[in-house]
Image 1: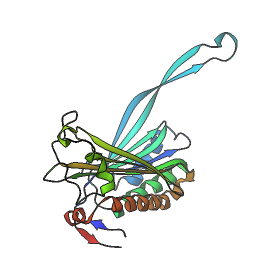
Image 2: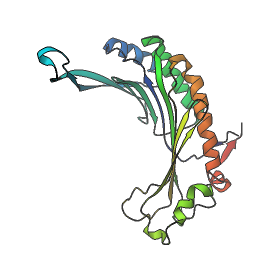
Image 3: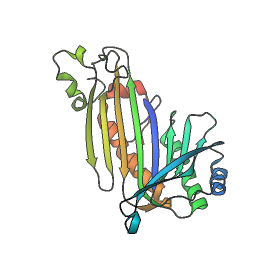
Image 4: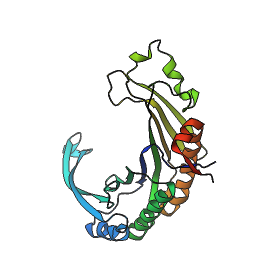
Length: 256
């Protein structure tokens, strides 16, 4: 079952790939990259920085001596017209990080990823990826008793909140599970994070945070298929994390 919801509680969606080798620092290539993605990311910002490196001499008079060097590096920030979808390209260590602060649906996510994959492949060649990750952070905020989650969240995920005799003394209640699939891993964190910590919990807010990733090396052109697998894994975990009363609030718009 792959429900889609009219009003999801997604606070942020993040896609990240880490490259096996550093990308070229060529500003021309960065501009070529932007030309390909400009339809989705019209805004480009060059961010200059300094990279510090330390090396230790291993021979002669330099043996055991630590030398520090520094050099200029440039990162690139690409933003959509709304300013809510941001792509960061970091040449060293080389990675691309796509974040949605206003998420519509998985079809849009895949469309953005396909555009990025095409741009990397055309600009930098058939790049080798060493880590691929997809993270969904759901921030569920409801009215009512802050600790009444039984109609909305799987009972196994809220049982830790029953431990203290006086719930009014809880200032944070979080759980963490790490899972291993056939070709991926998931770090799942859940519970009441409490943005007003260390004050006692006063608002009805529950986090479901799924960070799904694979450390299998692959070509950049294999990323879209991998993302399909990671998305399916997260979607399955989300569906067993919630109950029908929360689905009613979100509004199922179609089953696939």
